[in-house]
Length: 141
Image 1 (cartoon, rainbow, N blue to C red):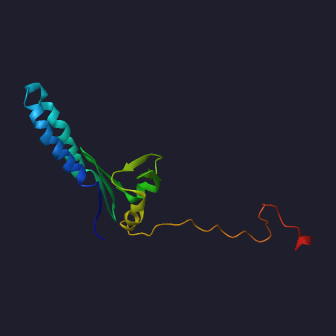
Image 2 (cartoon, one colour):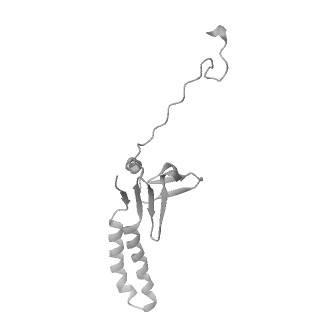
Image 3 (cartoon, helix red, strand yellow):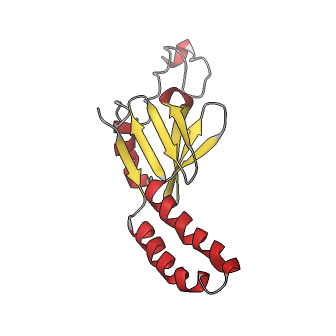
């Protein structure tokens, strides 16, 4: 299976480009105003680069600077939180997945080569034990 990519809307990078063009006249007035150009430039790069890639080996989480690779064996589950998804790790930590929404969870899990899990059925009660956990009396049978 190929890699499934989750990215933010391209409008973010376009908005950064518009802001860059708007900042050029301000930044060229005085030399000390030139760092203003770094803000829209960072928005453009982040909007273009940030996201989550999923394949059968694991997840690759990309941010403005750097990336983090998580194999599926380290991920214990996913928690939807508002309009984002958080991956729970086996060490007790968690990682927010950029550009992944709760509606994307089926595609994210399918990229792992597995099916989206449902709650597992409870095991049957052993014979002679009532649901309350007490031994059944022979007279009641």
